[in-house]
Length: 253
Ligand code: HPA
Image 1 (cartoon, protein in one colour):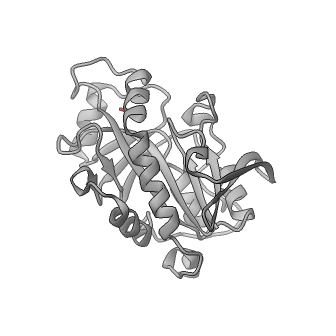
Image 2 (spheres, protein in one colour):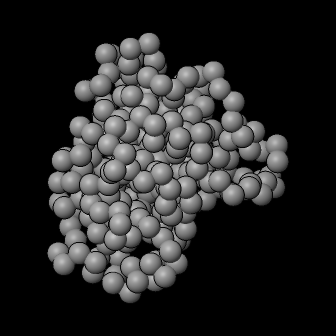
Image 3 (cartoon, helix red, strand yellow):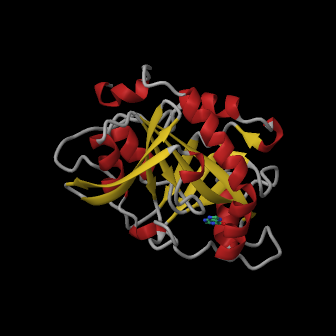
């Protein structure tokens, strides 16, 4: 089954689903509200990261429970959506970025499932290249999608200072957000394919002349939501449960 984790602005997928069944999945890390969607012949498990009404801030999300809940449901591949600020002038607000690398600046989060076993997972391809290629092929407007980029994850919930943005640019990051980590690592630790679709909602602090607010982020999400839902719908129909990928064998290496 495919799992989708919706970020800011994507709190449900009923617009593209034929039927929705809501359930609570209990895991050893906490319980998670999951919607099981029927979309034509496909079944999709959907989790809203922040919940409807944007109630959970990035540093309080139970990333471990969310990934474990999808694993318990038999999910083998996950697509997530994330609103991000751009620090790369070529990636203007309104662009989609399929990141293929990350820099983790989070400091408070629980970062691994492996506290009692030793696993040093390879991170040369932290996101799934197979999913990235499929998502890119489903995007109609090729001008507004980038098929790689480096995601910088901050702890939040505050936005960045101008000095932080300058440092992130020197580190050659492309987009900055608050929720990408440790989600991507947890998915790999649970041997699931994972790719996030970043939607650039704004330029980073001090690149843009405006003072950055969550309203600016929410407004761009609203503008682009239909494009994002159309993309997700096409990707869902294209993905098959019958596949193999190195992500499914991450612990063998
Ligand atoms: N910074 C961090 N997170 C974000 C931003 C940003 O500029 N925009 C949307 N999420």
